[in-house]
Length: 59
Image (tube, rainbow, N blue to C red; front, top):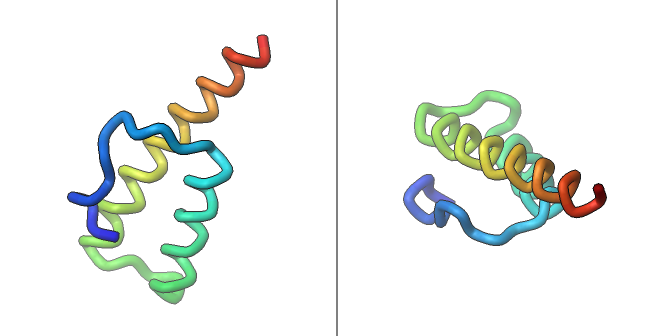
């Protein structure tokens, strides 16, 4: 997945995003290229947003 294919504001669960982050690290072998780093950063931002949304729903 390239950073361009990540849809801003897409509805993905924190668990799904976490799985994507883990898969990215596995594919990269523990060292991220510049493109993978950009993808990782987008995934982490989306993950943090999803976590906040899940906490608000639980409250």
